[in-house]
Image (cartoon, rainbow, N blue to C red; front, side, top):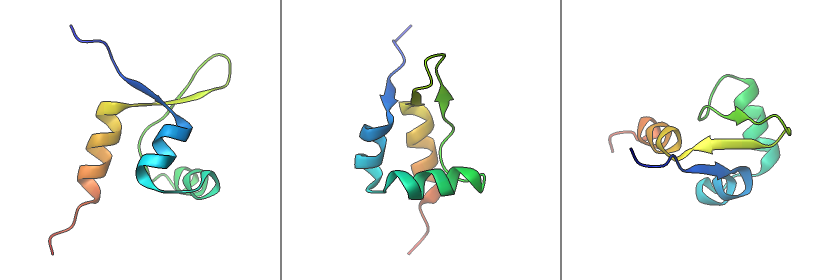
Length: 61
């Protein structure tokens, strides 16, 4: 079984080109990729979840 790739929030924000504040606003509205909060309070996003969310954002041109 392949190891899960858990991305730190700065890496996610860099990849989607979004500020931390905008990301948290989007999360508060129930949008955006699912996040995991670790016991130490840090946020992680599973690579599979991020890719699925990005795919769902695509619109037909």
